[in-house]
Amino acid sequence: MPEVPEVEALREFLDGHLVGREIVRVLPLTINVLKTYDPPLTALEGATVTAIARHGKWLDIVAGASGLHLAIHLARAGWLRWKDEFPAAPPRPGKGPLALRTVLAEGDGFDLTEAGTTKRLAVHLVRDPADVPAIASLGPDPLADSFDRDALAALLAGERRRLKGALRDQRLIAGIGNAYSDEILHVAKMSPFKPVQNLTGDETTVLYDAMRTTLDAAVERSRGVAAGRLKAEKKSGLRVHGRAGEACPVCGDTIRSVAFADSSLQYCPTCQTGGKPLADRRTSRFLK
Figure 1 (tube, rainbow, N blue to C red):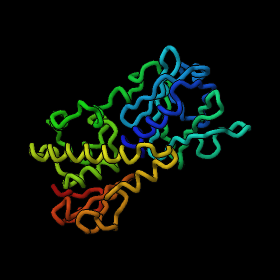
Figure 2 (figure 1 turned 120 degrees about the vertical axis):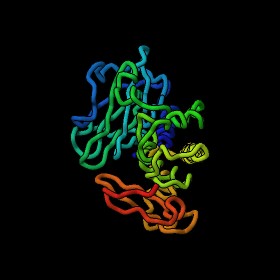
Figure 3 (figure 1 turned 180 degrees about the horizontal axis):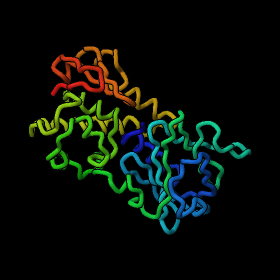
Figure 4 (figure 1 turned 180 degrees about the vertical axis):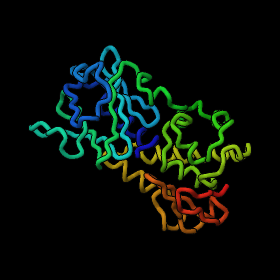
């Protein structure tokens, strides 16, 4: 799933390719991609894009004199693919991974695609991004200048969850998902299931520093990368996530995995859990 660094890179890419340009057509091509009906997508026809924003993992294309917002969440298997031109024949709805097509006056534009059979990619056309409940409920952005160590400490105060779950909660912190939570905790040398309430003040500082350095480095790696190559860039920069069975780049221990019903986490026992592996079953009692 695209997370803060990749969505920020897409925002920068679209800022250079869409702002100031006229939309002539937006075509939904799967039955469930468009989650709103008022205003209709035809309201974007002839509208000029004025800005590209990001809200956590959401892209926000702002267009028209009244400031309509085309809010896009790519979900787990979605992606944005830029096209310099499109085939003359219109696409057939419901065929293949194509979910939505946006065409500009000059004939270029972008497709939204989603692989697999579980379709969760979501597009909302709204007058205010806060009209999208998932955006309205987002926590602060970890890349914001105002998000400092004290802001993180305030968010974690009173938490009773494990670190992995807290970092992934979009209502707590916007934009961190499965991959970068693994990466942050590896840099911080903390167990993914360490209880948040057990963090000391110094450990909160370590966690904050790991969060900022990990995300800032990922954004920098992604900056300027073409949209079609961002997924590969993300994977190449990960140290533990998705690398079970490989050697930890810090200590050389074997990276291990804990599987869940629909996801998994990866960690280094030496760096994060005192050398003890976590039991690989859903009902594990994780190390603290």
